[in-house]
Image (cartoon, rainbow, N blue to C red; front, top):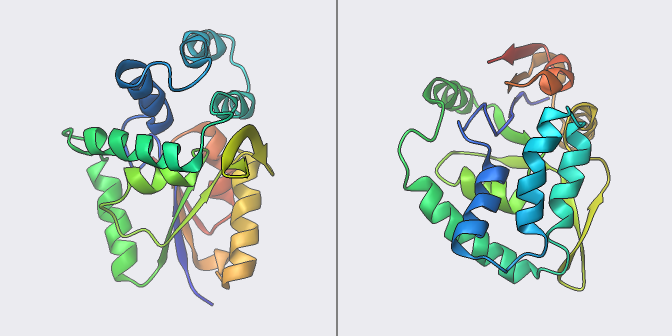
Length: 198
């Protein structure tokens, strides 16, 4: 069985919160493309101050994209990524070094994030990532519905995604590693032999 190295995205591999960076980019450069965007941004700090469960915030995040086509989302994410990746000091270099060491040791490199795959892939396009385990926004007839399919990939959801992935891909979790920066990542870290809080 193969080893894997699982990496949280926001705050672990990259310094910024990519999902927040994306909605701020939309508000500044493409206002009016997403319904309820400004209201969501305004409410976000209030949610954080009230310690609203992150799974709930995650689901609210995807609701603002209701009605957006996949093609429009891919275009907007590509435009955001071009700007995002042109910045300096984006990545946590010591974690990127760990990632590359795992890759050199033939470990499968997997992102585990509450973000969605379209965004996570663009944020890490310069890194040797094998797979992405992310929250899955529902798409019907080529449009986002605003709902999420299955659990959000946060907290215990990360563990559930990792267990299913390990079963499907033949990953030996007892020889694998994981890296996360938030207390909600503890479920992910406890799922493998070598869980590293960064």
